[in-house]
Length: 262
Image (cartoon, rainbow, N blue to C red):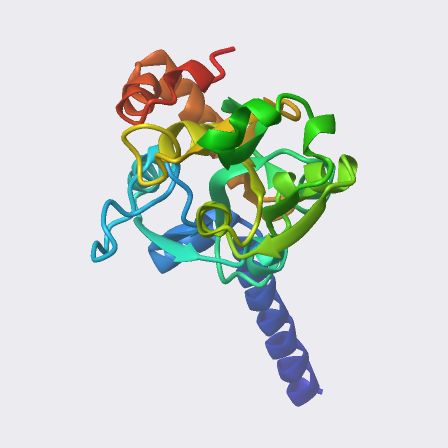
């Protein structure tokens, strides 16, 4: 009987030990702190997440700089990982990344797949065309015969579908601009914040411009369902708005007018 009781007690202790581990694992914050890194899923998307030069190893931008500060507040290192935007929810659930922080539009499918932060930035989807042809494309109707390049799984692709445009999905928004510049596609649909930073005079795409605004939207940061990091980030955003740090970083990248302050 003593042997049986000993075995039973050992099993109970083992179950309790596993239960303790499980409760700890249920906390995303503890998970991130235990491993010592906040892994941020991104794409090449100026002015939010980008590298200053092709040879650079450092990611900069409004989102990148805010993510660095948030990781510092958590007491961990930050690691940026380029992801296939179409697979962002799978990457998150598989724990390849801990959050999606890359000018992510708070669409219905995103809100269904992730727990998201409060909106922090306004945005819109805009049409990019060669500057020499801009006068031809003042409305969505004017653009109906164009062949568009859009980022796969993006709000830009949603707009192409909504307006019944012909389009080619590509890996990221930066590539859509390359497609238009090279003449492979007639136009692109990208975020207005990216358009302001990437096209027009003084940029690498001086011969392109943006014309039609197709919608309005808001950005948020995505975490795993049930993540306690959502509340932590919301508090961090509020703190950075109150002390002026968010607007300071936004001004550095020219996105201060888009920041949501209420």
